[in-house]
Image 1 (cartoon, one colour):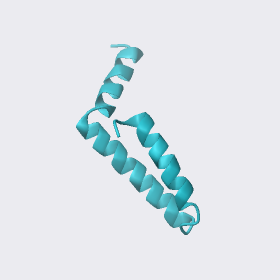
Image 2: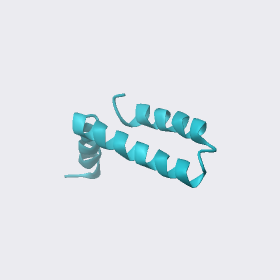
Image 3: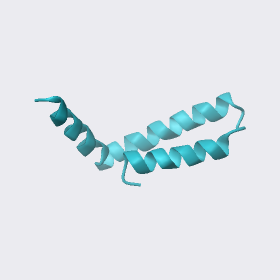
Image 4: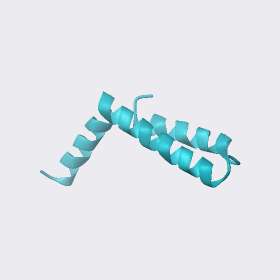
Length: 60
Protein backbone atom coordinates (compact mmCIF):
# COMPACT_ATOMS: atom_id res chain seq x y z
CA UNK A 1 0.00 0.00 0.00
CA UNK A 2 1.45 3.34 -1.06
CA UNK A 3 0.95 6.90 0.06
CA UNK A 4 -1.68 7.44 -2.64
CA UNK A 5 -3.69 4.51 -1.29
CA UNK A 6 -3.60 5.97 2.22
CA UNK A 7 -4.75 9.32 0.87
CA UNK A 8 -7.63 7.66 -0.94
CA UNK A 9 -8.65 5.82 2.23
CA UNK A 10 -8.52 9.05 4.25
CA UNK A 11 -10.64 10.84 1.65
CA UNK A 12 -13.18 7.98 1.62
CA UNK A 13 -13.38 8.06 5.43
CA UNK A 14 -13.80 11.85 5.51
CA UNK A 15 -16.70 11.53 3.07
CA UNK A 16 -18.43 8.82 5.13
CA UNK A 17 -21.14 9.61 7.70
CA UNK A 18 -18.80 8.73 10.56
CA UNK A 19 -15.99 10.83 9.11
CA UNK A 20 -18.35 13.76 8.56
CA UNK A 21 -19.48 13.61 12.18
CA UNK A 22 -15.92 13.38 13.47
CA UNK A 23 -14.74 16.32 11.35
CA UNK A 24 -17.75 18.39 12.46
CA UNK A 25 -17.00 17.58 16.11
CA UNK A 26 -13.30 18.46 15.71
CA UNK A 27 -14.08 21.76 13.99
CA UNK A 28 -16.62 22.66 16.66
CA UNK A 29 -14.22 21.83 19.50
CA UNK A 30 -11.46 23.86 17.89
CA UNK A 31 -13.76 26.80 17.30
CA UNK A 32 -15.10 26.64 20.86
CA UNK A 33 -11.54 26.53 22.23
CA UNK A 34 -10.45 29.55 20.18
CA UNK A 35 -13.62 31.44 21.15
CA UNK A 36 -13.00 30.72 24.81
CA UNK A 37 -9.39 31.88 24.60
CA UNK A 38 -10.33 35.12 22.80
CA UNK A 39 -13.36 35.89 24.95
CA UNK A 40 -15.68 35.55 21.96
CA UNK A 41 -14.10 38.57 20.28
CA UNK A 42 -13.59 36.74 16.97
CA UNK A 43 -16.65 34.47 16.92
CA UNK A 44 -17.87 35.83 13.59
CA UNK A 45 -14.52 35.04 11.98
CA UNK A 46 -14.36 31.63 13.63
CA UNK A 47 -17.82 30.74 12.34
CA UNK A 48 -16.87 31.81 8.83
CA UNK A 49 -13.62 29.83 8.92
CA UNK A 50 -15.25 26.77 10.44
CA UNK A 51 -17.93 26.79 7.73
CA UNK A 52 -15.33 27.08 4.97
CA UNK A 53 -13.24 24.28 6.46
CA UNK A 54 -16.31 22.05 6.82
CA UNK A 55 -17.16 22.53 3.13
CA UNK A 56 -13.62 21.50 2.15
CA UNK A 57 -13.40 18.54 4.51
CA UNK A 58 -16.84 16.98 4.49
CA UNK A 59 -20.15 16.78 2.75
CA UNK A 60 -21.91 19.65 4.54
